[in-house]
View (cartoon, rainbow, N blue to C red):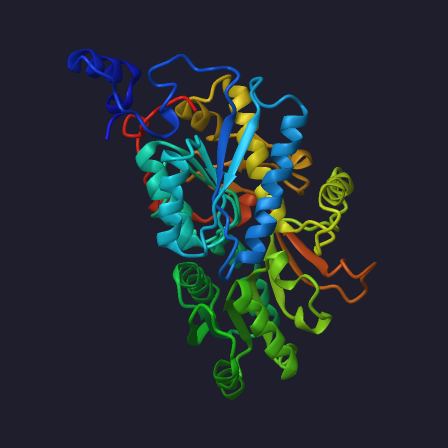
Length: 429
């Protein structure tokens, strides 16, 4: 598909030739044929889960986006235009994600899409978005394929991925505990892709994969898997289990006293999946992109703004999922301002290669949107349970922080083939 198919000149030419009116749909319905109205709101479609395995994370993701939108509107909007949002539940189901993306673009006239936790859902949304040229921010799904073989010119990936987290954790764990590794893997795209990255690193660092236990999404009884682990006696367990499944796994491991019987690597730990759990449920070492207890400029103010906007939420402090949703939305709006236009290609070019200071990101290292994969290269933290918490929300002890270049996912860089600008439809939102 080339840009000429959706150019303003092409539409007007078709109308003149036909002697009638062109039927134009989607975010370009008004501004393809007419001059862009400066008082027309910028519409953002929010594609976060509100049900399914990642409903809790989806709610946190959405709160982050809404705080960034509210703050921008309080400052006068973007390019003098108010930002509006429309949210539709993607249900943690890829097919639903596709339908939601189509509706948000064609019926709700959203020029931008934001949100995902499930990588399968994110991939489905991004295929629709690329077809229309609509910029899509994948805020919280972390399969390496999202910035690898399933990358797109319109898609930007804001979380660390499974390979980044594995690089930060695997070598230290093998050196400290031994090289015999068992894997427990959610049986869907994120689990498989994360496990593949983990296996490659275990082999690279001289370890041995003893076995891999696949668990379907929606698993609540892990007794068979845990019995198998007890019988095998690995040095290390590398778990790629997420959402409500991970909550159930952690509870059952703690009940059996297995949390300290072997070294557990939980590739990535999303704050909504552990918030409020007992301390003995937070065993092992895990990765994250941000923590509210980081002693860095801006963190306390960010927490205070969260608490002021969401005084009644049960989650009293923001976590990594909220942080990713907020940062992605804030940077999209800033890119539109820098571009001086809502033209999608101009905004894409503002995002590609954009460097974000460590101070602005409240991380230890500067971050950068990789122009070749569209993944945010950022600080990766390893954490474990905090044995001396300041309060009930101080659940993590940060063990290490890795610079982006030290955990870079080279495999994704080689697998990603972004569409050209000419093959990406262009429009002004």
